Length: 249
Ligand SMILES: Nc1ncnc2c1ncn2[C@@H]1O[C@H](COP(=O)(O)OP(=O)(O)OP(=O)(O)O)[C@@H](O)[C@H]1O
Ligand SMILES: [Mg+2]
Image (cartoon, rainbow, N blue to C red; front, top):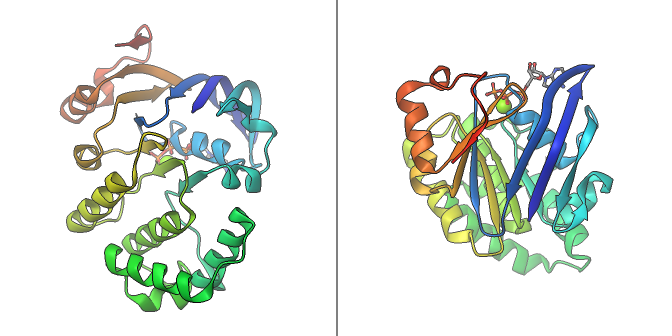
C-alpha cells in the first residue's frame, strides 16, 4: 500500500528525516516508535502533504502512485486519514456541517441528511460521545481525550483506507483507549492499513502490530515484531544505540 524510499525531509532548513524508508503492506499494522522530537509527527505531516515540511530527496508511493505529486484533497480522497497528535480547534464550523461537506467532496455524491444524522448518532453512541458534540465547532472547547474521540468519529464517517494514528493514546483514559482501539480493530480489514505512532504499549495490546519500527537519527534503525515494543518499554530507547548497525529482524 505504502512505500517510502530514502526520504530526506527538512523543516525551516533543519533536516529531520534522512534516508528514511518504510513499507506498509495492505492490511498491515505498523507501529513507529522513537524518542520525543525525533521526527515521528514529521513523517505524518509529510504523508498528509503539509507544505511546511520539505521533501529534499526520496519518494513515496501510495498504491502504485506518486504520493508527493498529490495535493492534500487528493490524498484524502484516496483514503489517507491522519488522527493528529494535537487536533486543531475550528470554532464556528460545526462537526456535522464539515463532515457532511467532506463526505460529499469525498464521494462526489449528495449525502442524504436523515441517513447522515442516523449514522452519526449511532457513531456517537458507539464512541461514547454526547450527541451534542456533532453540532459544536470542530474540537471546540473539547478536552484532550474528547478531541481524540471526535477525530475517530470523523474517521468512521469518511471511511479511510490508510490510517495514521499520531499518539491517539495520549490524553485518553484507560477505558476510552480500550473502547477506541477495539472499535478500530473492528473497522480494520485486509485492504486497510494502519500506522500507529505511540510511546506506550497499551494501544498495541489491542491493535497488535505486524511490525514495530524504531526511529532514530532520521531513519528506522531497528525493526522487529511486537516483542520489540515490549523490549523498549522495559529497557528504553537508550538500550538501542544510534550507531548500531541497522537491524531489521
Ligand atoms: N513546523 C515546525 N517548525 C519548526 N520545527 C519543527 C516543526 N515541526 C517539527 N519541528 C521540529 O522537528 C523535530 C521533530 O519534530 P516531531 O514533531 O516530528 O517529533 P516527534 O518525534 O513527533 O516528537 P514527540 O514524540 O514529542 O511527538 C523537532 O525538533 C521539532 O522541533
Ligand atoms: Mg509527535
